[in-house]
Image 1 (cartoon, protein in one colour):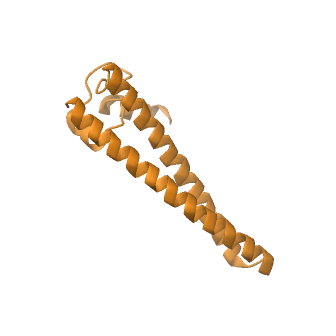
Image 2 (cartoon, rainbow, N blue to C red):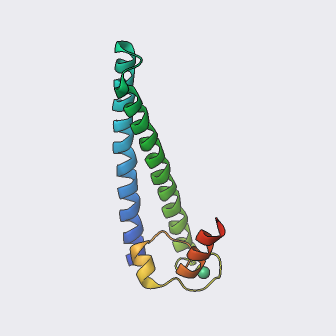
Image 3 (cartoon, rainbow, N blue to C red):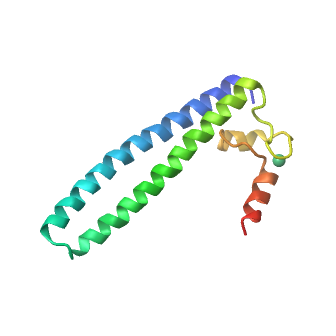
Length: 120
Ligand SMILES: [Zn+2]
């Protein structure tokens, strides 16, 4: 993949993740406000636990998106130093179709599946 295309894909991915983080922060603020209101009305309102659940989901999504931005930044660094598209684990080339689907990825499909398996 040429540098210009990679840069465009990474910029788009970063913009998307940043926008997501922003909108989830706004929703989180709304959920927190709603939870405060619920608490004032009735501590045992079942809505309260729904809000706590939604808040947990939002926090997890924000974490994931923040991680994604960090991965994109790392990929941009690799692009700048000429190692973009090379697997961080085996140093082989990452397939173009994989980079198109996951522009921020740092590992090839073989290493990605090995990493996944090693968690178990
Ligand atoms: Zn690899």
